[in-house]
Image (cartoon, rainbow, N blue to C red; front, side):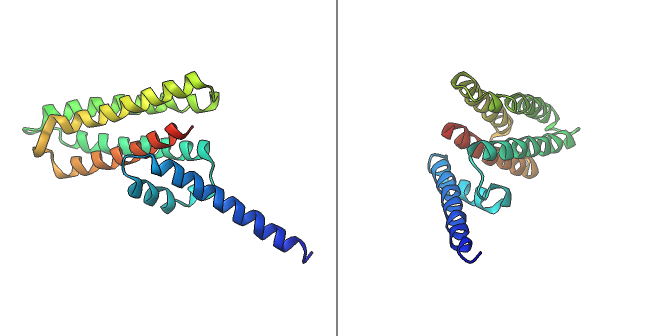
Length: 164
């Protein structure tokens, strides 16, 4: 039994090293490597996860953050910003639909599906940015914060997809 312990420790260290390498590899190719690393390392689900599992985790996070942004946009149901927020709501809804359609692409694991996945994620990023473009510098604080959160998660998701 005592001889099994060193082997187990070595296997555990090797597994942690591989997870560290996946996170470093993904984040080194992201738009904001330090933010990407911070997000991935702060989530216990990501520890030891391989690339496909990281994708599954982050597509769910992207849907949740985009749904949160949609709710913020909908909260501006009257006033001067209503028309702009309606555009935001439509853009966020489109982004959520695209993210949901991306979930099945990961399971196919062929080059064409991964290419389609990356294209859809780029479209999601554009959809989220559409809201920001409606306002320029006058975007309400809560909507700007929600949009930034979406963009950060989607950026990590794009970095993960580019590693697949």
